[in-house]
Structure formats: C-alpha cells, structure tokens
Length: 281
Ligand code: ADP
Ligand code: MG
Image (cartoon, rainbow, N blue to C red; front, side, top):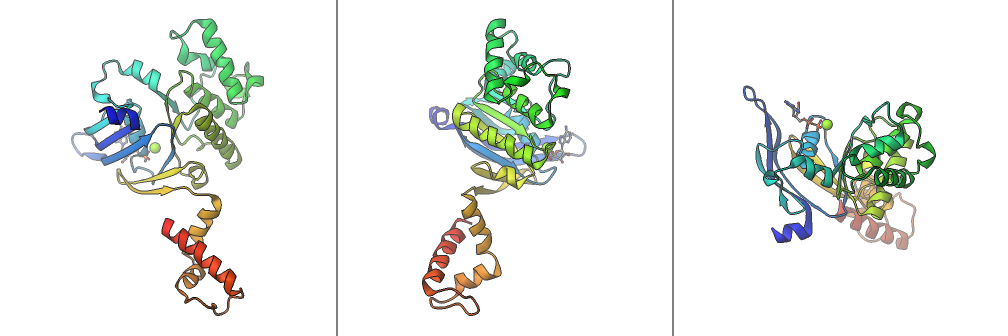
C-alpha cells in the first residue's frame, strides 16, 4: 500500500452500502474512487443517489457493507480508534452550519480542539482561523448574530481546526443565496490552495460545482460520469459545440457556411475551437 499512501488521499474500491435487512436499500452499489492530495472535487447527482452515504463512509462515520476504503494509504476498516483518526484526518461541513448557539464564533472554533491543545494554544489557533476566513471582527458574535454566509464561514474554519488533510462538505451552500454561495466557494478555493486541504463538496448547484476542478456525477449508488472543469470560456464552447449552429459548423466543409456571415479565416478559427471543445466534452 506504499504507492497508495503516496499517491492517493482517498482510494475506494467497489464500495457498497446496503441499508435494512427486510427490504434492502442499496444506497451505494459499487463505488470506485481515487482522489489525490490537494484536489478540489464536486459530487453531483439526484437526491437519493447516495452522495451523503458516500461522504459518511469516507468520513468514517459509517462502514461499507462491502468494499474497501483507504485514506492516506490506511485501510479504514483496520483503524482501532476511529474517533481519534477522524479528529486528525477529516473536517466536516454540513448544509446547516451546526454551530453551538450559545457559543461565540471564536468559542465554536475552539470546540474541536478541546482536550487536544492547551487552552491558550487553541485560543490562538481559533483567532488565526477566524482571520483566515475573514471574520476577526465577528469573534464575539453568537451564531444568530451572523449572516448565513458568515455562519458557514465559521463552519469552514471549524472544519480546519485540527488541520485535517481532508474536508467533506454536504451541500454547504444549500441554505445560502447564490451570491453568498459563490463567496463561500471562493473561500474554499482559496483555502484549498493556501492550506493544501482536499475538499469534496456535494452540491446540487452547477455554479458551485464549476468552482471545483472535477465534477463526479452519481446515479443509483455509483459514479456514472466525470467532468473536468475547464475555464468558463471552454465550458461555454463545450455547450455551444452541441447547439445546432455548433454542429453545422463542425460538420460543414471548409469554405463558407451558408447564412452565417463570417470570413473564411474566422470560420476556420471557430471550427478549430469547437473541434477542441467537442473533443473535451
Ligand atoms: P443523497 O445524499 O444523494 O440524497 P443518500 O445517501 O442520503 O442520498 O441516500 C441514498 C439512499 O439510501 C436513499 O434511497 C435513501 O433513502 C437511503 N438511505 C439513506 N440513509 C438511510 C438509512 N439510515 N436507512 C435506510 N435508508 C437510508
Ligand atoms: Mg444527501
């Protein structure tokens, strides 16, 4: 497993999760997954396709019925003290921020460090984390004195408290308006780069997913598709390549395209861009 340890942060092989013993529900039916250190990934898919079940298994909150999961090269099923492993390895962000309502922003950040660091150290780390997410001026606010977007920023900071290599986020923008959702994704992108943390983000929102570098699509308990996210321009071209006009341009012979007023040179350029985009799609 040395290679796995070096190359993959997460390696899941043929993971199944079956609920119930009477009428069985196959929440996951053969998931294979490889994720490298430092990746930023989105998981999309219809409701009930198994996204949350998979996150719970990757976060060692749940066990697969069959199949194996390695995190940092370690076979998760062989870990004795799961709670300690989890505290060091995985941060979680949920749709609802799950902050403790009677604690301030700063105190909420100290919670995961309690008993792990001396009080003065955890206070200092909590202050650093607040600064990292741009909320130093809200340190003494209670969750209900913060906006939805600010609460989620605190939740992101809390996920990073123990410096885990991996953060799992289950619809973190689900309760935010689209502007706050985009802000949160910008923060997550920054942290992914500056802290080298791997983020896996389950989302229904294509605009959110496009802020990541890979979109994995689940259906009926398995991955059915993977998209590499290009620049917005490439993304638009991919879509355009499949429009009627795009298809006409792609299939037209060199020369001019009837009813389309461009020079031969322009047409050639458009065709070459579309051909590239079409190959990516
Ligand atoms: P998603 O997050 O993609 O909406 P889930 O992972 O929550 O999907 O659920 C996948 C399937 O497993 C669904 O059919 C769901 O009803 C079922 N399921 C999830 N959790 C449980 C559970 N604790 N007991 C029984 N069935 C469950
Ligand atoms: Mg879910």
